[in-house]
Every structure is written in C-alpha cells, then in structure tokens.
Length: 124
Image (cartoon, rainbow, N blue to C red; front, top):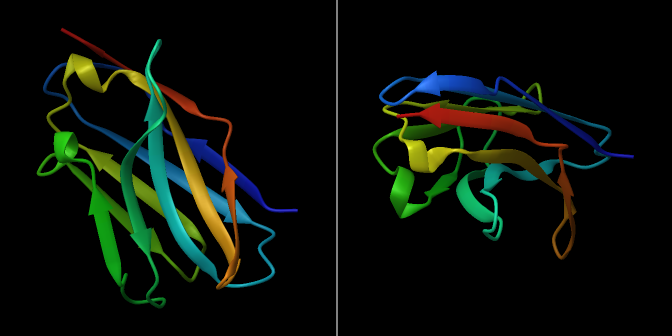
C-alpha cells in the first residue's frame, strides 16, 4: 500500500514563504511522478506543480501552473522518494488545501495516490 504524507503548511502573510514536504512510501516500482495539487473552497482541485522521471541526481521534467510560475519551485529527492514545494511571494489567492500526489507503477500500469492534504493560508 502506497502512503503519501505531506507536511509544512501553515499561516503566512502575503509576500512570505513556505516550504511543503512530501514523503511517499510503499511503491513497489519506481515513482514516476510526484507533485502538488491544491483545492480552495468552492473550487476544483488544480495542478500546482509536478516533477517527473529522472534519477537520484536530477529530475527529467517539471510542470507548473501559470499562476505560480516564477514563485514556486518543485524539487525531488528521488533516492528518498520525497518532494518539496518551495513557495515564495505568496498571495492570498494561494490559500488552499495542498495535496501531494505520487504516481507509482510501470507504464502503462500507473496509479496515482494522494496525501491527506495540508492547509496553506495566506493573509493579506
């Protein structure tokens, strides 16, 4: 059973920074993708950033939502099956529950797993 656990959310003023961490365990195969989605009240869950592939020393590709480009940075430690989201210059509209996600398996048999979510609140 794959488990995904996030940490690092909290309350911060606009312009501040937070770093989210995510650890995945139990994947019998290589973790294909790790990333972050978020969901604000009344909104659908949306992609924030994802990092795919690579090895213990590099990530093959990253993808960001337009709204966070230049402010958020995703990184992975593939040797430890962990991912991080550095969030700088936070804005009130970044307030949401942030969910870590991990995709486990060998193509085409891939399964996406979700963490329980961590609240990020940005005050104006």
